[in-house]
Amino acid sequence: MESLAWMAWTPATLIFYGLIALALGTLTVMAIRHPEVERVGILRIPTTRGDRFFIALLGSAFIHLIFLPLFGADTIATLPVGEGLEVSRLWLASGISLLYAAAVFRWV
Figure 1 (cartoon, rainbow, N blue to C red):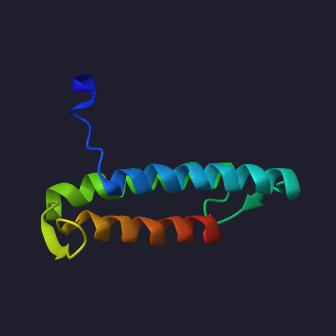
Figure 2 (cartoon, rainbow, N blue to C red; figure 1 turned 30 degrees about the vertical axis):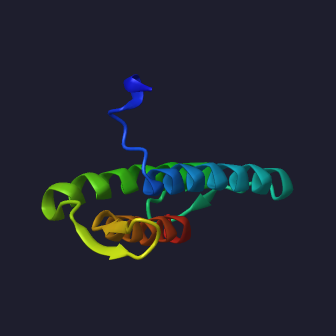
């Protein structure tokens, strides 16, 4: 387990990867039940659900990479759960990323 000690396996990381797995599963079920039709949005290129999902993930990574040096990951609150669950500023970046992803899926 020492080789994985550098990784930040936190509840937020668990939620992040769980949501990605849920999204991929949902996209797979949607592709089987409702075959895709390419759509042309504001980029003026035909995109599929998978393309928009990739664009949303890539944009979310950049949002987090830009957010960290500008605002940091300091704790903004401690919830009274167990020994105290700390809520960091990165949750704000995650919220911005969700809004970005919704915009990508709607207009791209």
